Length: 155
Length: 81
Image 1 (cartoon, helix red, strand yellow):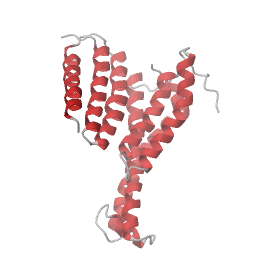
Image 2 (image 1 turned 90 degrees about the horizontal axis):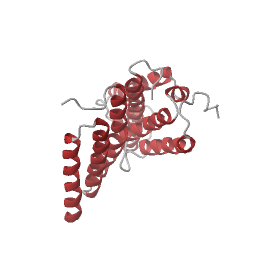
Image 3 (image 1 turned 180 degrees about the vertical axis):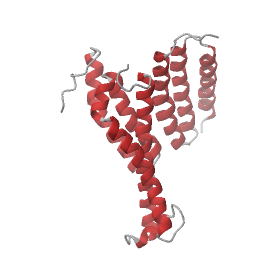
Image 4 (image 1 turned 90 degrees about the vertical axis):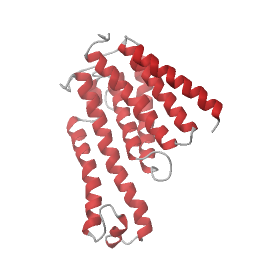
């Protein structure tokens, strides 16, 4: 684990320690919500918000720099653009392989799993794209709001 | 659905909405708005719309309250009107 006290601005040990212990579990829960989105309540949007909120919590308890150590600005921008690319790419692949846009059963030509399994698996791919996009946009919204657009310091 | 519970949560929701509008302290208003969102989440979960309740709990009560507070810290805390 990297030295997390490097950029520390506040001094409250209780908040810092509890956030440091909580953040991995919050992220694991966010991934669970994304992956189980088509079986149970949840999905890409909610899971993405939870993943973004974990980094926001890090920025609240420590510093904006600390959250940018764990999620750099370039990685955030890359993930935020990768999400729509996954979504549109899956839909366009379906159209290319002879189905309608986002008709996942057409992807059976690519990897033969059966059309029913592809309909279940395709919605999972789309949810991953939605989750990545929502996570990075939520984090970017918080960075911009709390630092006045400078993305260097705040709260 | 238990209609007594519905009525209780709904009246609390209305009270929180009125308090949010009437408060002059914007930080307090955003905190009460977080309570409003969480009560809305409870109401939806109680009526069986678990997915909507989940969205309300994460977006409404969780992230948007933080956004409001971050915006207040960058602007002013007192309402002008």
